[in-house]
Image (cartoon, rainbow, N blue to C red; front, side, top):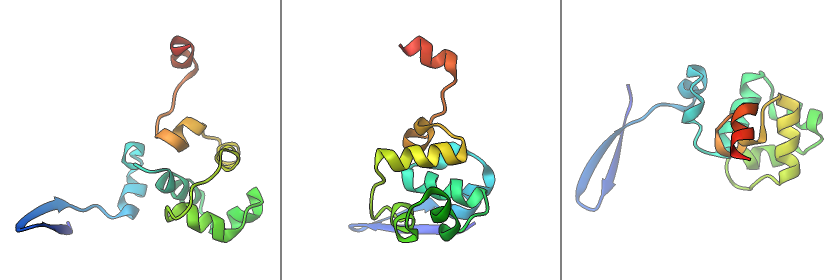
Length: 108
């Protein structure tokens, strides 16, 4: 296992480092802490390149790259396009949480 060393002033703190590829392969959705990682995960689990996805959802490849690198935030329309195309909820893309219908009704 790789180790990541972080220097904070004069203290050295060691943290476990799990490569993103291992997280994707584990299938543990709770590890996707950002919208960018969840968008990249969706694309990679469907074995798509950024170019292929851009053609399917009518978006530029560079925009997809910016979203996946957290250099730009997708609009609500883009989140909905990802949601519809990959068959996941907007809740999962935005918050990493998937609700079922009974949980939604209880909240309302």
